[in-house]
Length: 163
Figure 1 (tube, rainbow, N blue to C red):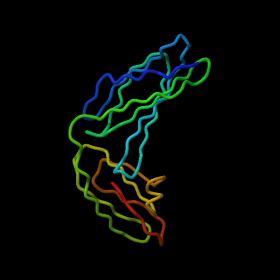
Figure 2 (figure 1 turned 60 degrees about the vertical axis):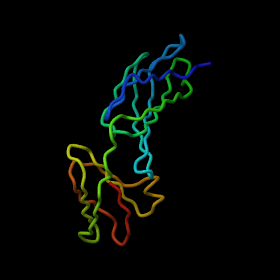
Figure 3 (figure 1 turned 135 degrees about the vertical axis):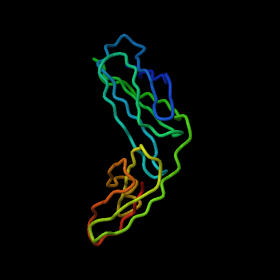
């Protein structure tokens, strides 16, 4: 039986988490697949996937949000097949940023100008869809470090926006 990998949180800060991965077996490991999950605005679960080569690994994941719970899951790729999943949870340090205040204004039938307030030097995600279900499951999205963006939409539809 292949055991799950051991994930150990080495350190964390306001915007990053460092963790190590190792196996407690003599089975040859060729690498790991790691998923990092977090919930955006209590509506949308986000995920970042890392594919890591090699047996032992220390990874640092940056560009995270302060005071946010993250779930890290990993499995090992071995000569005998994939291991079971292993999970750890961590909350980044610091104070969570205030949610931006979003204003959306139709420019014409296929373009919406979105603008918001918030801190500088961060990346914003703009999510939009025609229903709450679509907004949760598979929204259209883009990212920017600006405080405004023009979003192209389908004509004759109503949209919900999050930033």
